[in-house]
Length: 66
Image (cartoon, rainbow, N blue to C red; front, side):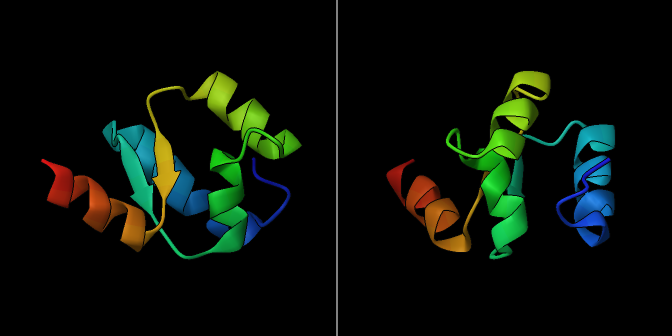
């Protein structure tokens, strides 16, 4: 359950179900899941340590660094 924005739940559920390592989004509620200063972010990171949420720009930077 993701009470902050229930419409985003299915994206997180799908990512977890397929064992994804990243969710790439511009959605602020989804990005909050990567924020250790946000209570939802802390809970998410504790429960799903292998799954990160990043912006498209962060993804491009990661790809460029490889």
